[in-house]
Amino acid sequence: MTPEERLRELAIRHAAFAWLDARRATGQEIFTQDDTTGLSLAGEVHRLMPTQQGIWRPASLRAALSIRTAYRAEGVARPYDDAVGEDGLLRYKMRGDDVGHHENRALLVALQERLPVIWWLGVARGEYTPLYPIHLLGFEADRQQFVLDIDAVPQPDLAWPSTEIGIGVAYRQQLTLARLHQRPFRAAVLRAYRTSCAVCSFRHGELLDAAHIQEDSRGGQPVVSNGLSLCKMHHAAYDRRILGITPDYEVRINAEVLAEVDGPMLRHGIQEFHGRQLMVLPQRATEKPDPALLEERYEEFLAAG
Ligand SMILES: [Zn+2]
Image (tube, rainbow, N blue to C red; front, side, top):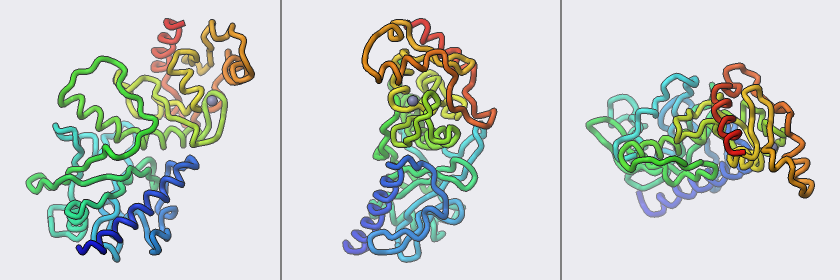
């Protein structure tokens, strides 16, 4: 690839990342084939997703632009869950067993030319959330897999392990899986709560977080029934044990904070929710917050106050 060709490949990728950033800034976390087709990127029209699973290279490019992993229902093993090596890096299986297949060759070009790609993770049937930029670090021919680095993917609302943890292979693997799961977890939780805060029903996606009920450092799973869609303020209040949620979905406020006298934010934003039911819950029974997990977390709220 000439330097000019590489620059063009890079410019299209950067335009794609900027387009995704702009959409995500409005709260959109889920994308479909249709959403991401016919985009004008660096003066050309491109599609960001393959029509099938696997590796996508637009006809006018030489390197792969994206890869896609199918949706698996929660509870069903996801293909990437076992794909973290002892070095903490992810592995992505090549297409079939022919390294000369045009899709595999396109991903090898991205590796050789150091061109980042988009990784689409299935959130529901036909719906995907993007991780980017994904850098390729190597190809393991004997195991027919690519080595991926997701450390450059921004993770603004990732909670770091709060408990004591040993440094070693398990720790590296846990960090990588936490980074990998966060984006699809967020997309699935916001979707289940119709992009609203469970406590106050505030509806600005860019100010909502997907909170874990049981933290992942304590074994909490990245599934909707272990999640709550919360606005920034109610998320912080929940994490700091100022706000608790009972297993019956009732909001409680710490007694000391309830007695404080302050401005309208405290009164209307926190105190008035004491004793109220959550305003927004998922419609599907399997996605509602798990009472056993809420109970465990509520005990910690009581112990703190
Ligand atoms: Zn809220």
